[in-house]
Length: 234
Image (cartoon, rainbow, N blue to C red; front, top):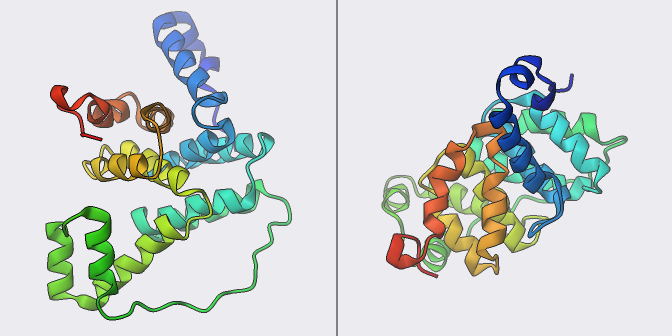
């Protein structure tokens, strides 16, 4: 089942021209190549939709991405990040979306599962964050095995992501923006460190708007302001 496009809703067409004009302008940014390729923005919209449990929107966006050239490997990046960031149920929903969108979806042979060496998680957290955030300090103290698990999943989402490091960070940002998460600040920094421009970051965040509304931008947009205006320094 496909989502009925918002622009086709008769009540909005009859009563809300300003709303539809604004939505159409947002979609124009999302649906076309810009700072970020349109096929990846379709993926970003889809994972944001999964975050908000809007499965029909996720299906429509992945189908659109496929027509734009989105590959199964690129789409797998969404599956990896959703597994880490939003858990098993979200990942399983997205796996079903991918199965439906790609004909004869083939997976490679299973790989051996890696393990974390002693001290590897702590070193990774320090290198990425600068100093270890308080929740991760407590995880290291109270459940070292779970800290290793967190580290391994971070490696999968960021270091071993099928997308480039920059686009992997932007995908993370789209999901965090959809959830209005303060964790977005970490990945604004991460995206910049991976080479993303603020225009690319802005487009990734805007990909959360179809699923989460303009509040998604309001949750993150201020982070891109100049430091003297309260934004995150480069």
